[in-house]
Image 1 (cartoon, rainbow, N blue to C red):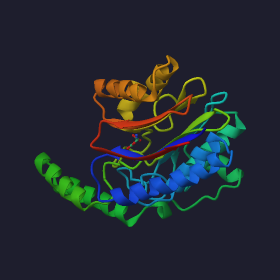
Image 2: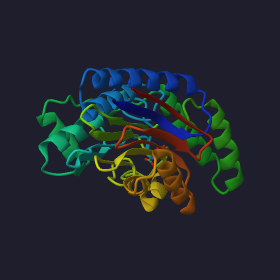
Image 3: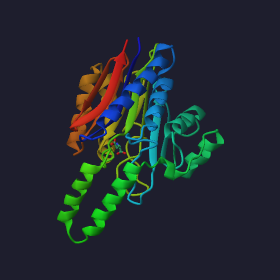
Length: 303
Ligand code: ASP
């Protein structure tokens, strides 16, 4: 038996929904091939997430949303439920596949979390190509950022008009300026091991240096063979404060199913004032996906 769930982020309705759904379907297929061939949950989630990092309408790798300075700063994490090995990276500017760097960190086993240039130095020393940060920015993201800047400039002293201009920009944007489109995957393999991976550009207009929930073990990403695996998406600050993934795994460990675990974790997120979603697989290969946002892109398969 094996199972795989992938997500392409929680958020509001977006003109990019179809492309995002297609990317999820392709990622599912890619990760599924690995599981079906007897491969590991860890290999499967990394492959699925890497594929989504290449999709321009998703907020990870190429196509990530921009900071208030107009730069990209990417976060990612991966965790193996077997022995709870983990790798996490943050504030990455020159890697197209931050999840691969997180995987390398996991494999090395020396540190769990690296941020900034140190990630790039670490990854480059292990053969990952460093790219010009500008090549990670899509024209849609650049336009959305410029619209945001214009709105902010035009509205000095006129708070109401900021909102109006931003929502106009939101109609034009594709994908969502809110940063929705974070990607993640959770899997259960033939050896009964689970794994989780998450990758994101964070939230649009974030302060440079801000790190969200995705690379934080226990918040946006978590896996433990004794319980299951989780990848979350949504309001990063609230997900961190609610320790969403941790709450879900605690419920799973108590023997309750993944749907209920997702529900309890989201209730906790709501309690701290956040919205979002999560995907879950438990230690028996049962899966769930749930969200409090108007929509979340996801796909799953079990056999
Ligand atoms: N949770 C991500 C972050 O806050 C964003 C998202 O999932 O939409 O960085």
